[in-house]
Length: 309
Image (cartoon, rainbow, N blue to C red; front, side, top):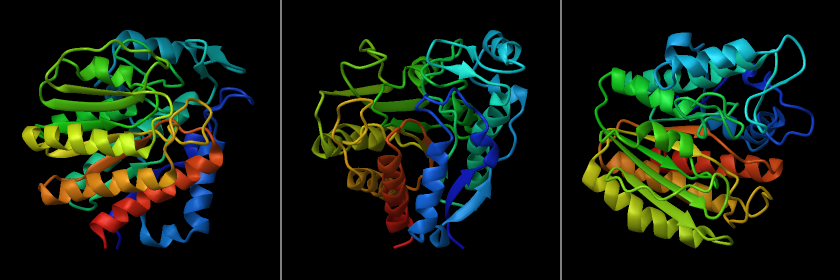
């Protein structure tokens, strides 16, 4: 039985923000199709995400935000949260499984059942802060899972964010938590155009437009891995955005699918060699459907190469 898992749920397709919105259920469809067509499904474990509860959202978010989202769910049509982020009648059905996937991954890793879990979920999460939903994100799936892992006794956690957009929500939640090391790369300038913040537990790695996979390797090998050696995390979480791909017109970085494979294999090998419990990854951005599907395939193959050569 494979120890690399894809964790998802059909309910993650029910959230809808309009026919022209780039964050759509088709993103999960193409990932699933690619996993099946490539034969990769036979090498992976498939786990259904459990349903998160309201108290889980409150691990990383304020009562004010949770109540605001609940109260604004429309009976029909759409309700705006920030102009780019909309709610539909079925949004919470998707959210509870998107959040639940991370909780499931933590449980599976702590129980010794898997080495790595890829949460193929939507809506994404890394722009959601304690008090605000933004940037296609309702609640911060990764942040909630990190808080859950901490509650289970995991003392030191590393978060790696490779989305083309800075994970400002995740940073705002963990900036003052010295038990969390947050490493993030992102195109600069680009939404949300973050200011540099000086914290010992934050490593911000802005990349200029047109940066390619060589820049990714320089950041990981030169900045992130040395920081993780010093920090000695027990568990690694990844905000796995695929919108830095050359073909994704959401931004202007030039990663290709082989870069995502290299990254996941390198991080997984690091986890193995440093007695880290496992790696939990969350789908964030990635809006060119073909590039997204190829990127996820290579990402999963990289983990398989590291853990199950």
